[in-house]
Amino acid sequence: MKGDVIVLEEHHRKAGAAIASALLERVVEKPGRFSISVAGESGSGKSETAAALSEALAARGIRTAVFGQDDYFVLPPKSNDLRRRQDPEWLGPHCEVRFDLLQANLDDARGGAARVVKPSVDYDADSLSAETVDLAGVKVVILEGTYVSLLKRIDARVFIALSRRETLAHRTKRKRGREAGDPFVESVLGVEHKIIAGHRYLADYVITREYAVIPVP
Image (cartoon, rainbow, N blue to C red; front, side, top):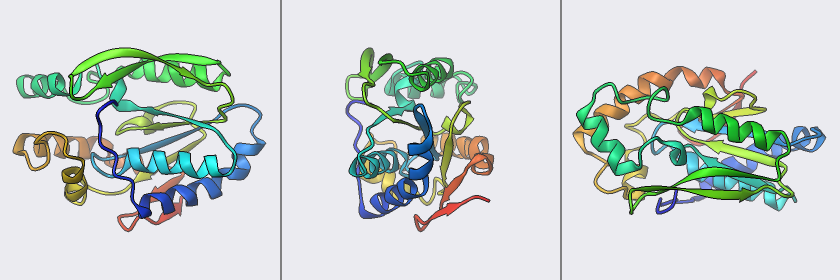
């Protein structure tokens, strides 16, 4: 998402490197493109972990493309926040997110498409547009977002097990307007927590609150 603030720190890079090492053999051996999802609550470090994972794979000679769920919201961020305040039912992947399009873009990428056309959100302008992503030479597609564990045809799922209370400091660093600490936003994140709490059990790798990467048997 254009205008988003990504604060990449050493613990993100360590986690990204650990995941890259754990998956390297599978990535290389797969004939087609490999897909990895990185999910978790708001501020848990999904964007940063995806960026660090991309960086770690690039260091191993593997090109990646990163797709962020934030670009697939039906409404741009500020408009979506207003809709949430007006409509208590406006929350979750079934209504807020163009999940069918995200899945279609993933399927096209996994199928070997040379390029895909995807949505693009401008946070500051509160606008939506489209962009073409060149996938030439891309071996790994990384998808990051709150609900991406629900995507089908994912080769490896990563879940960051940090709650909204544990992510407050990181959300404050990202400076998304005045979201961090807003009572309404915190209540929304409480609902999101209930929605995705069980998603960690879909994961192949869980990142703990200390940012250790734990493989799930």
